[in-house]
Image 1: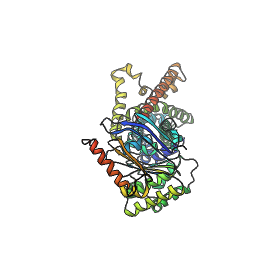
Image 2: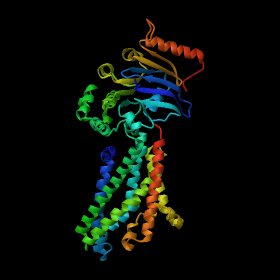
Image 3: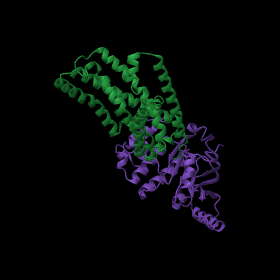
Image 4: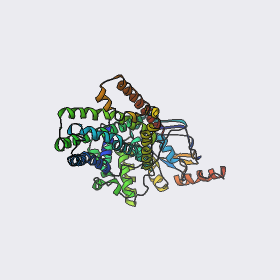
Length: 244
Length: 247
């Protein structure tokens, strides 16, 4: 774990990371009053305080968070390769497996932090600006945010494997965005293909909330776990065989 | 006595034909060894193989008896490196970069960070970001990183590149002092023959990826220098392989 603090330090010292933390905090704060004003004008309640954090989560998991993860993955893998920074760590007495693990854990921690920021910010906004904010809604939201971490990590590991084919972070980021949008769009054209992709489970917290712990949900959890194991192994293989 | 470095029949061929072929030599404790050769001779490739940044196609590399591939962490615990082209994190300060590197050596005291920075004359710049450093300042900083872990074996790839005269002299004094007082072993790749004459106990000459000569200071004929030995080897190689050009 000696490299996890290093990876975290590298990530949070970037201006872009701080900017994303701030944007994540302000996004629900800006949306909340806008929704409130709109609802007052039309005289119809679209969202209340109880469901507001879930509305924000559904927006975040589909577009915003995957893009931030693609950026983090592109920076930590091809970005460091491009700047010859990776070799600076590789010549220290630490195995490549430990370095790879620490990078993945760092991204996992980054995602958790982003989810936490959005969760706190959306709950505060819901409590201040919207009607019917409840403790039950807050707990349910917390559960949903926690659950969302898993499919997003599956997408992250998938991207980690692919971005290592690239020698530049900007190309890797562009490819990641295209790949992600293909994964989102493809199920609309070929519905059966969608079942095989982790994007199918990106809003799986809705299934958990609606149906509880069902066989379908358990099956998807096992599938996501297998997906994570497969792409962690393939990603590590790519990382290990690379020469500098 | 175990050699600090054992290179046994190491071959590494890149797709463009460059690389090293069947290299073998060893370095004993406290020796300062110069790796010489024209551009493209394979010096950096060999150094990258030693620290496992690239994997040899054949052969074995042992550091203090530890196989570099199967016992990487143990082998690298006692090694300091300055490899040409490898960069620190430029948006962090010199001190933060050293701190980052220090996490891999659990027994290292914080005072060591300031000590190595003062050795290379960079203590005043420790809170400046790497991206604001000139080439010479970067080189001094990388030398500090190489010496950070109190290594018993230091690999330096063209360490005086970009250094001013004062920087070169400071570097040479530092190498001499560490080799003499602490028996630190050095493998230095350089183009500067006067540096080799001043510092090295032994030289290994590479040309087109092959070793074309190895000589210790003790074994040199009277009146001969490393420079004359180097020129003899290069001329002999040109006679044997008149059409051999750096790939």
